Image (cartoon, rainbow, N blue to C red; front, side, top):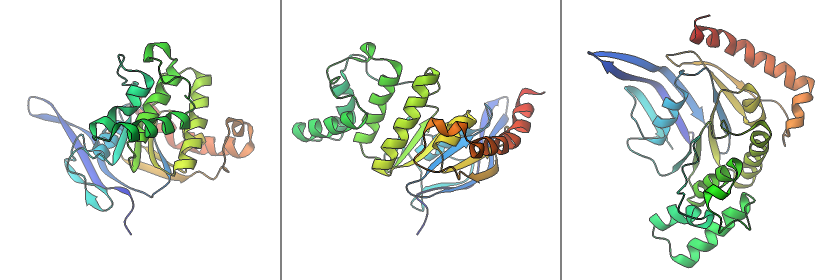
Length: 260
C-alpha cells in the first residue's frame, strides 16, 4: 500500500529573469504515512514552503513527482487542506460563517452544514464565540477558526505553513498542544513547516531536516519522546539530548544560509 503522501526526487526551479533560474528544491524524496505528523525543519529559503505548495498542488515540480495515494498531484488537491501563517479569515463573516464557508462551497445543505460547523467549533474550543467576528478574537482564537474551517472540509492531509509563528510564545505553546489533541482525536496526517527546533520536537513523529537552498533532505529523525506530549517535556534530559542532535544537523545549514 503506497504512503498517503510522497515526493520522488523532486526538483523545483523558478525563473529569475534574463533566462536564468534559481533552484529552490533539489532531488527531494519523502514518504509520509497516514496518521503521522511530519515536521519540515530548516533555515529560511531552504524550500520548505515550496515543497508544501507542491503537495497542495499549487505549483508543479520541475522534475520528479509528488503523489497522493500513489497518484501524481497535477492540480490543486482538495484532499489536502492548507493552513497558512496568516489567518485568511473573512472579516465580514462570523466564526460560524467562516467555518461554514467551505461547506457552503460544497453545496452542503444548511442544517447539515450548521451541525458540522458546530462540531468543529467545539473541537477547537470556541463554543460560545460562534457569533463573534475575527476582529473580536485574539490571534490564537483566529487560528483556531482557521483550523476548524479546514477540518470541517474533512481533508485527508493537513499542510501547515508555520501557522503559529505570529503568535506570542505562550499562545504558541497552547496551540501546539491543541493541535496534538486534535490530531490525536481525528488521526489526520499532518505536514508541518517550522523554523523552530522546539516546535518540531513537541509536534513531530518524524523531523525532516532540510539543507540550505537548494533544499535537500539532509536527515530524517524519529522523534522518540513519549506521547502524549506536554511542553513540560522540554525540561527532560531526553528532550535536551534530542534537541542537541537536531541542532547539530541544522547549525551548518543556518550558517550557510547567513553566509557566516
